[in-house]
Amino acid sequence: MKRSSERILTTHTGSLPRPPDLLAMVQARMRGETVDDAAFSARVRTAVQEIVRQQVEAGIDVVSDGELGKPSFNTYVASRFEGFGGSDTETRGLAMGDWEDFPDWAASLVRNPVYANRPVCNAPLALRDRGAVDADIANLTGAATQAGAVEAFMTSASIGTVAYTFTNRYYPSDEAYYYALADVLKQEYEAIAAAGLVLQVDAPDAAMGRHQQYRNATLEDFRKALALRTEALNHALANVPPEQVRYHVCWGNYEGPHTRDVPLRDIVDLVLKVNAAAYSIEAANPRHAHEWQVWQGVKLPEGKVLIPGVIDSCTNYVEHPEVVAQRIEQYARVVGRENIIAGTDCGFGTFAGVGAVHPSIAWAKLQALAEGARIASEELWP
Picture 1 (spheres, helix red, strand yellow):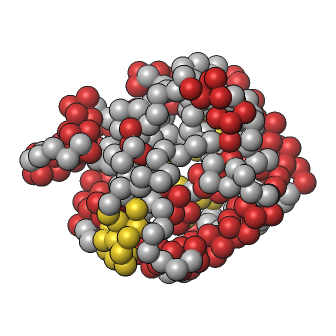
Picture 2: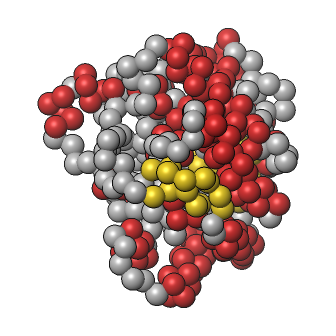
């Protein structure tokens, strides 16, 4: 994994706006409509080439494939793994604690269609389609080389993320389900790392889970569940070099009150137990912008990298580059300039066709990120 040895490197969280024609194909597949597989694969490949080039031109150093061919960062596993079927009629949607705090606001929301009819785990888990991740890898590695990117990363869902997305109706316990998921997901993790890419494990469950799945539980109960998921995740990462792993934590990529968000201070010890070289943590939104102070009392382990979100991913404000630079410098003063990579809070295309930030504004935000990193670098490497 590259480090900020001479300047502050830039990256983002993974998902990016899909081109309209590809978006139409992804959504058609989500609806169960017939889409020519060869045409779809070809368009994903050219779209990844385009979007990697756009990232490099915007000033992003560590690029991704934008998750362009996936319906979302988590539900994609249903088509790649055996063991998911039926429909989750008992837990339709994914309720949040702040919905309960502000029911009048919650009633005005348009529910995410991605979760409307998701399946459950109702049979033994196994890998169905290894070719899908191989195609993703080929698309990204080819595009990154062609565009001259500094480095490339690929996202994959965490154990806990898949667990809350697809309710367990088969395994006898949460632990059994987590480790079954680990044994399947590890094949995707290892394939990404073996290709020389940086693996990003997407784990909103590590923070959002507190005000979602565990909103009516105690903090202790949530921490116990997160500890178990962390153990299962490390089991899945056993054969992946930590220096090729980054771990993304967020409180949910949605604009809302977030009044039930668990403080970073209450989970940071468990976050740092993940066998990763870098930790990507939401830090720009108004509920968590103050939490750079956590790192004054919690030492970032030797050799590790922090990727704070210095760009918000839920509003159409384009951050001023000076603000971005100030945020970067704030973190650099606490953990060291070489231990920082500037990132975004979350993705700009988390769910196909559902996003708070307009595509053209998402790119303006990434350009502001790059310019802010340039300004910060001039201050940090005078």
